[in-house]
Length: 253
Image 1 (tube, one colour):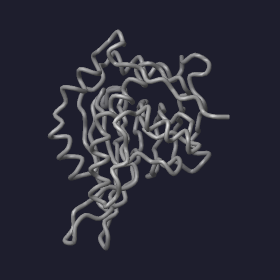
Image 2 (spheres, rainbow, N blue to C red):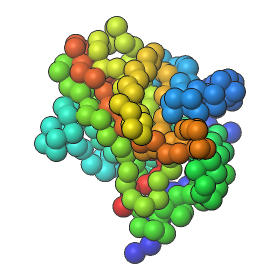
Image 3 (cartoon, rainbow, N blue to C red):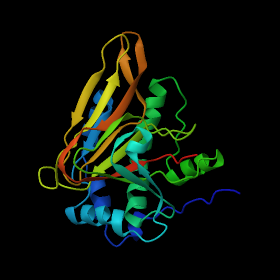
């Protein structure tokens, strides 16, 4: 049976234009410089505290059908903690953020492809890109909510769900570090050719979004650009509860 194409939600049609305005007002020149240098960049205060609290509450209060599956991480050797994948149709704010961020990131993804000698293959519309995923059998929604408690952590990994992979993803911190939880830093590693891996710790505040490479990124060397692999994870939570929203732009097989 053919997958049903999810209907994108127009930002202009939502009652609260706050996230759209915050996205438009970001320093995109700084963002481009950071993402090209490190493979990760932060969009500060993309969500308000009220929006963060509302999204975090969905983990426990979402209506039946909000989520398609729950993963207990220690059962699979992924670390410790729990996450839930949303099902279509996505909540309005999640759909809005995913569609709008893709529209901003498609140019970066195409530029990275060109630097690596590949075709600039990502369309400007996220709906068009999802149609390509679904035609290839990747039709399951990938946005997710993650929750960590004391002692929980997420092992270094890459979020690859099929042959179609958009090279960037985002995570938004929904609670305040130092108040709701301690520890739980976002950690990335970059595997450099013939060198030891480079670690990066990304400080985030409530409402900040970190955008980072899913699996690899272009890095300039003495003979032009080459591909370096990246992984991401979360360090151990020392106390409290850490909640995040993950936005992956390709769907899963």
